[in-house]
Image (cartoon, rainbow, N blue to C red):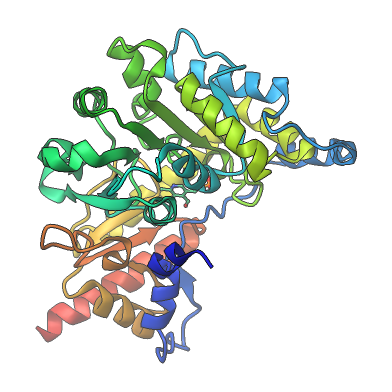
Length: 401
Ligand SMILES: Cc1ncc(COP(=O)(O)O)c(C=O)c1O
């Protein structure tokens, strides 16, 4: 067996199950689960129809690169969304089976296992795939804490030079899970300059890019930032977008990697051997999904409605920061996050994710400590009910204090 497997940490939901062992959710109330970030809005009918109408494609082996039509639909979407002048569908875009597998597999491509003490820089809190992908590729993760006092900005400038010298990959997550923070053009400028100086690649995870709350101000994308800063050919950058959250198809496993053509070429070669070509019916459904924005506008409206309603009820007793994007509240807890999450489940039958499970202790601090991640993925009714139960718990704690 590969000894690097032993370095993998238990996944947050495994740790959550262990933490909640022996806790019985209040039996008088139906359980409301806000712990998993899985979209629960219905999949649009036109996407299901495109999938059904293209089942004949199952009789062929699909190409690793995906169909020309799919790569073009993705390139067209990226250009429209980010106002890009040029995206070469043939060389700068690759369909992937969700962004999770792409984050993992691209890391295997970009890390040089012969370089001793290679480092992958990760935000903290973070999506756990970054860490596992780095460890299995033979790199050590170096965590940079997201500072709540700075709008959850990840201060890349704070990373010491001896770390940058060994860095091969930097993961960015913008909009961030769980914080909802969006990287600014200035932050991209700093990071691109560091990438040029220290010769590393950037894997930009943007799977929440379409879940934003001000229709007039979509989050800045990494490819857009590269163009605005005058960088040629998206050098050193691969951006990852996904249909899972945007189009409510987490089960379809459809996403893309786009950017630096040399990196995309290496990734395509790796994928040929890895064997990760997209099912032809899913390719057809993905073309339909990337070509339509109406359903995405409606999807955002549903999230906005829930985010606002939840805020109105909860904020007066438990101060919340409104995120720029995403469907999470990253809320501060009145006691240890693990204890509060257990109490919320036992007394109010509401499941959330304790923040400390989404972060590592780095620089003497676990930035998830005393925070919970509340995923507003259920119905409006469930969201309102959960908000009321949360308020009741906080009020009763305040009365006892
Ligand atoms: C930050 C982040 N990145 C990537 C993913 C994976 O998304 P998918 O593989 O569905 O595209 C998730 C899923 O929850 C996520 O939260």
